Structure formats: C-alpha cells, structure tokens
Image 1: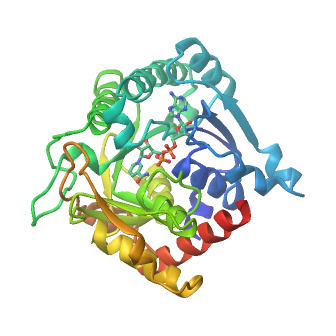
Image 2: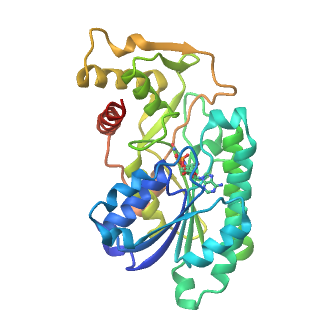
Image 3: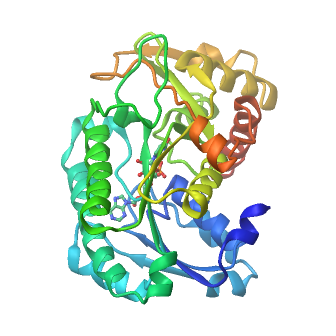
Length: 348
Ligand code: NAD
C-alpha cells in the first residue's frame, strides 16, 4: 500500500489513547504495516483493552521490540512531560479522550479533565519538545489531533458538515472535544506547532467497548437481553468502518496541509433503527433462534439533548489526499458482527 512507502523508517510515533477502540487499530497498523517505534500513552481506563494489541506479540518479538506502553494520565502534567521526553517523538497522534456521550451527561468532570486539561498538558509538553528539535526533525514533525463530527452540532434532514461548518457542540462530550480542537488550533497559530485536525463520523468495528451502540446491541442479542433503542430510533449517524478511519488519519498525517482540518466520513447515513435491524438480520443468519432477534428490541426514554442527525462531506480528504473508504456499511457490519459473536461466545 502507498502509505508503506511514504512512511519514514524508524520514526518515533507517540500515540495517546492507543489502548482504546480507534487508538488500538492505529497501533496495530503502525506495528504491522509500517516500520516505526510506537509509544502508547494511555491511562488504561474501563474503555481500554490491551489484548487488542498484545495478541500481536505471540511469537513476534520483533513487533514487541518496537512497542512501548506508557501508563500515564494526561491530566497529570509532570507525568505527561516525562513521557514526551522519553518518547522523543517525530509524530504525535492524539486520540485519548473520554468518549461516551451518555457518561458525559451523568458525570461531565472526567471529560473536562481528560479532553480539555489533558489536551492542554500534552500541547504544552509537546511544544517544549518541538522547540528543542534540530531543524531536520522540526521539518518532519507533526501533531495530529483526532476529533469528532459532534463538535458541529446537529443537522436537520438536509445538508452535511464540512471543514467550514461552525462549531456548535451540544453535549458535555462534544463541548469538551470542541474545546480541545480550539486549543490545538491556538497552539498552531500562537506557537507555530505543526498541527492537523481530523473530524470523523461514528466509527464501528472490532474492539469497541460494548457501551456503544453496535457492540452493545450484539452483546445484548447474544445474551438474549432486551435491545434498547433511544426515543423513536430515528436519529441518524454517518457510519465509518474503523480501518477506513485509521487510513484517513495516516493520510492526513503524511500528506495533509499543516494547520488544516479534514472531515472524514463514510457517507453511510443510517437511522439507529436501521443499524439495529441490520445487526439483528445478520444474527438471524449467523446464530438462528426460533424467533428473530428483532423481537428483543425495546424503545427507551431518549438521551437528554439527543442530536438528531450527523452527516459528513468528505470531499476535501477525497480530492486532496485521494482517501476513499474501502468498506460499505454492509461489508463492515458483517465483519464486525461476526467478530463480536466469536468474542462474546468465547467468554460465556
Ligand atoms: P475509547 O473510549 O475507546 O478510547 C479512549 C482511550 O483513551 C482509552 O484507552 C482511555 O483509557 C484513553 N484515555 C482517556 N482519557 C485519558 C487520559 N486522561 N489520559 C490518558 N489516556 C486517556 O475512544 P475511541 O472511540 O477509540 O475514540 C478515540 C478518539 O477518537 C477520541 O478522541 C474520540 O473523541 C475520537 N472519535 C471517536 C469516534 C467514535 O465513533 N468512536 C468518532 C470520531 C472521533
């Protein structure tokens, strides 16, 4: 693949949140397909799963020798500073965040600590690091901040978000991510830190913590539990398979214009009702019962301030960086459901 040739050899990559859902997919890609040294800074929270990386090391000492886990909470500046010095990075990929909207509604403080204070601490430490690099390494250095389409607010039936959309976050989660985007931009404009920002739509795929819609529905169905859908189930999200997101992040890292943002989406808009129905239909084929899994669906009280619709216009990353998603929603969902069924059945 083209990225393999573009990626500098033996480069030092500091990734934050590399033990989470998307971060671990980035770490696997960096270790398996590219020749770089990876420093995974993660506080290891309930959402982390180190087995999403560790399985790569069975009988592969070479991969393991290129991987370093730094168990650090971004809200602790001195620990972050130590970690940045130790990693001595050429690239920083910032994914660590508290990421679940429902948790941000019941308890917003960790979102402020991780997503805002944590991003500030990382930026301050990385700024010092960048200022001390020699000119060759400075030329190469990039800080890529991974963000969400939720910072743009909610859409009605028409239109889509793009790089020019104004920020209008509406949940504690999206407000904390918006704040982190603004900080990253400010560190570019004020201190010349070479940053890039990506705003991506909803991801799905293996290794996501089963509090998010798709793994939760599969977990409940496999266990014969009710499948809850918020409100009337008509809220729309634009779904992207996680590997497509990872390829987008790496394209922006290597080819994006410093100081710019890139919207990444799958152009696969689905209502929650459609997503849940599709999962049930796949399960009806994969592990049939004498009733359809759709019979387990129940409608529950809507999430507070539930955004109605998100949709991303990815024209910029497609036309400028030749990025395209490889997986249709149906293809990605089949892989995903099959993977979780195996995982959840093995646990029983
Ligand atoms: P996740 O919750 O699965 O993983 C987040 C990881 O960050 C966890 O391992 C956690 O331990 C770590 N982390 C959280 N706070 C930390 C702190 N203070 N210090 C160190 N580590 C900390 O999240 P995800 O779904 O993989 O999302 C990764 C990033 O992508 C987030 O920034 C999120 O906002 C963004 N994003 C996610 C989606 C999505 O659909 N999941 C879509 C667009 C953007």
